[in-house]
Structure formats: structure tokens, C-alpha cells
Image 1 (cartoon, one colour):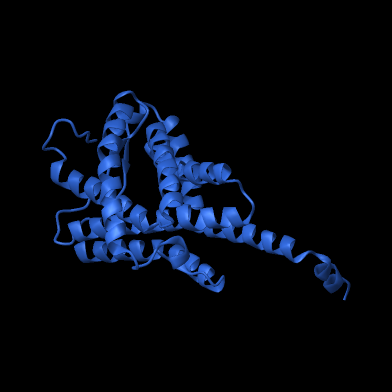
Image 2 (tube, rainbow, N blue to C red):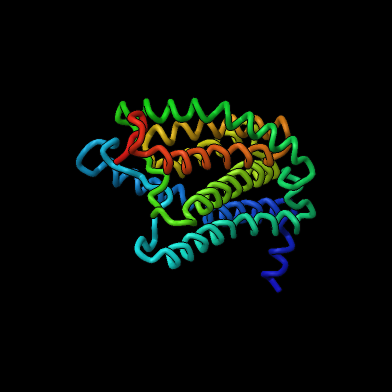
Amino acid sequence: MEAGRVADSFPQEAVSRRILRSEVLLVLALSLGASAVSSLISFVGSLTKPGGLKDQAATLNGSYAPDRPWLDLSWQMFGIATALVPVALVAHLLIREGAGLRSIGFDRTKPSFDLGRGTLVAAGIGSAGLAFYLVARATGFNLTVVPESLPDVWWKFPVLILSAIQNSVVEEVIVVGYLLRRLGQLGWTPMAALVASSVLRGSYHLYQGIGGFIGNVVMGVVFVLLYRRWGRVGPLVVAHALLDIGAFVGYALLAGRVDWLPTP
């Protein structure tokens, strides 16, 4: 009875804020927050390893069973599907709130808007991002990023495209749409929420090196500002997917064939 009276004595607003904080921490712990910690550990390992960062490689899409293509494909599809589970959790939480994914602009109500704006954003960021990566690696601030090292089998490019789409959905729905909504509900200022979202984005790319961190923080700032202007993550998902498809497929087609693209 005493415990019940104590619980009843808490203001409802305080209980709700506590629940929201716990919810955000749990969602991040199951997704990109855990990736950020893993990335930090990987970065420390790279820093303490003999040799410079550019002499080390960070592989994004590797093979699980190089000599067994069907088993490899099964693992690839399993990894893509399970990575999307936190997005399903976010959708569930937003539906319980009475909002749903439409509240963050991840729906099919404006396909032309999402595709058009997303393509423009990808075109603007893509060339600048590639140039920044090449400079960061050349100056020793970045590892050599290997976007893919899959075997030359029939499912290689479909898997790379699906992997790119999965990355874009997970990151933009959670780090932009969901996180900014929850931080706003928790009373964070717009600037504090922008910094939190952008630094988180940079943190889970830290395994690529300092350049990967800085470049993705800048990208995070741009994406947050665009989200606040448009009220939709749809264009950001499209832009991110196009950027990753370009990186994954482009590397598969060009690696070893052009001099300007670094390889391990």
C-alpha cells in the first residue's frame, strides 16, 4: 500500500518524462547508440594499431561465407532484416502515442516531393562528401573505406542496394524523425537536439576515422535543418539511400579500375 501511495504521489508529467527518457535510451541501445559505442571501440583499436589510419581499412559490406553463395545470401538478408527491427519498434511506439510514422513524414503521401528533394540533396552532398573523404584519407585522418567486398555473384548488386536502403531508413527514421520528436517532448531546445542528433550520427561513423566523424556531423546538421524545414524524413531517406547506393555500387564498379579511388 505504501509503495502504491508513493507512486501515486509522483506528478503525471514527471512520470511521462521519465518513461520517455527510458524509451529513448532503450531504442538507441538497440540500434545506433550501440553502433556508436562499437564504433568508438573500433576507432580506439585503429588508433592504437601500428601504422597510420589510411593504411587500415574499414569494410562496410563484407561476405559472411565467401565460398558458399547461398549461405552468404541468407546471412546478408538476415542482417538487413534484423537491422530494421528498431524501426519497427519506433513505428510501434509512435502508433501507441497516436501519431504513427506519418507524424515524422515517413509515408507515401508525397512521393514526388520526397524523390525530387531527396535527389537534389544527394546530388549536392555526394560530390562534396567524396572530396572530403579523399582529403581526410590523404592527410591521415581517415581509414580507407571499403564500401563492399562481396563475391561476384548474381545477388551482389541487389544486396548492396537493399543494404543502402536499410541504412537510410534506420538512420533517418531514428536519428532524425524519432529522436528529434522525443527530445522536443522532453523539453530540449532546438539547438541542443540538433547537436545531439548530429553528434550521434558522427559517432557511429567514427570507425571510419576522424574524417568520417566530422563529415557525418556536418551531414547531420544539414539533415536536421532540412527536416525542420520540410517536416518530413522521406526526402532524407531518399537522399541517404542514393548516396549509399552510389558509394556501394560505384565502388564495386570502379575499384581497381581508376587511380583516384583508394583501395586497401
